[in-house]
Image (cartoon, rainbow, N blue to C red):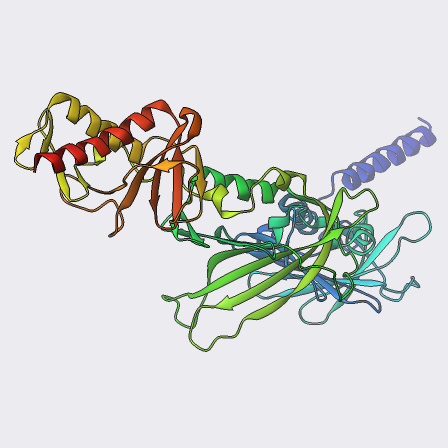
Length: 470
């Protein structure tokens, strides 16, 4: 038998065995030149991303209890679009790269990106402009100062250096205010309005102190929130202006960790919006100064000025909103339902609810008188006013009938009216027109409806008849 075919068959078999062993070999432990994690960090643990461009200022976004915030230069902290910050943290956490020799000739690092986690550990990435062909290389320097270079596919330089954190800012004006507004002040230079929220209820605090119409306050806040910044980083206006600018100030109460873990520090965050006039030739945009201040709420603490930014914004959402106090006064004299009124005092005449009706003093009131007292309770509590003037000394056009002072209380005796009560007045104007006025707490509410007039006249008649009976 010839030896050649046998030798050839043997060689082929050996080759097949070697090939099989190579193909079926276990993965190598080296993996030094395969893709690997660049940062080895969890996205949820990232709390700070900070960039420094060569020769430029540091720009930083950081995670706060209410979301991500942008900080840079002299401008105030500003909220970042949450989706962009989360996406960037995910990209960095998932970043894969192939190791590159540290001695390879590459363009200079033009920006540095520093990432910090919730445990205070920092890793920096040196970013270069993309090399010819789109190749991207970053220098990773860990917390021990060890340098390692990676070739990556993600456009970090374009996102963090070219575009920058500025483009991540929330365009809403309230993006500069952390927390929920608890106080609002509007100063037009001619008049000033103050609104405050206590235990979840809004009140007018100046120029008078009275209940506020909650829907109007909510609408004002929603209108401010709908204002969108169209251009950030505008130049400041000239120092001298022809007239005093309108300012809108919003305050939020927040807490920060204190020296005692069980007693956090209370802080007032203040946002001041100053309207400086047109920001474009069409007059559509307004130049706004956006100032941020922080005031720790403890003795001796100084107010911290966090900076002012100038932006161009379209104030159309605010144009239909009242910026004067009369637009925010509660529409009814008292808060609550008519059934809440358990007793009425009419010029000292005591009227109390009793089973099935009302009593005046010791006597049960007739049905028509009881109906009139029910109508007066409804006028005080559920009937919306037709108009309002911020004064407790009105000058009505017409002949006022003798007024009476009205007090109201609950069935348990809890007073619903101020100590001086409310003055009820009916004004008969020329031509047969008439109105009812309820006056108190620096506010005159006017009621024009037929039912309101009938209730007011009936109350005056009850007092007149009782005085005549005596």
